[in-house]
Image (cartoon, rainbow, N blue to C red; front, side, top):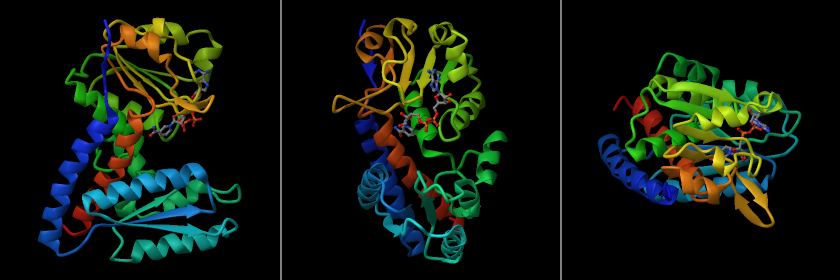
Length: 287
Ligand code: NAD
């Protein structure tokens, strides 16, 4: 058996077409254009590439997008003040602060400074907290992309064994809440699971397996349960090629559905920022 490929570029295109229609409607209703301000501190190649993809997606769906580059040594207070000004600007509907930030910047404090109503990545603690009570209007973009891929299979989540490998604040933890919200039976694995020699036994149980670690071939293909849905979030550069965390060729032989890397989770993550901007725009304009 060979798995069906979950084509992220195709899914992203479908979502962008839907969002484009919605944006046109919202512009007609409100007479305004949804606008994103994206903050980058200093220069980071990864962030610049991500910002470029966001700009293209925004242009496609009809959202105005501006990347603001702040100086590398900007003091925390100046950054906070800059964010506060954007919070108060009625022409700005969504704000995003790129990670990584320079060492002297307290990211958590800065993220909490982004207004709850303009927080495009769902990184303000209030928006993180809202996920616990099932208010999932604004959710972090990568977990949202993972959920969109799982939903695209049409396979029900309820009652399924879901295993997440990786428990970071931006992927594993928020994703665990989203999967619980849909009644998956959940295990979250991390470095200590591997240290205890238990990663394989957890992975083998997974009907839905999501891996977000950043270690190529961490998940062996023959650990994948037959027919499982495998979502590989990992991005690793190996010999000039981008690969995920799952041993793709072998896993593909066993899985029911699998995301490629690149071209799986990434392209849909970018679109989720646009989706969140539409949410914040609608909220701010009561439409
Ligand atoms: P992180 O470094 O914050 O967290 C890594 C997680 O992996 C931790 O929970 C850690 O305990 C766990 N881990 C580390 N070694 C392990 C091991 N040997 N066995 C089991 N667990 C182990 O990483 P992150 O920011 O969540 O990113 C994870 C990966 O996902 C990276 O490759 C990153 O580039 C990628 N990523 C992709 C997207 C996208 O949209 N495609 C978005 C965000 C992150």
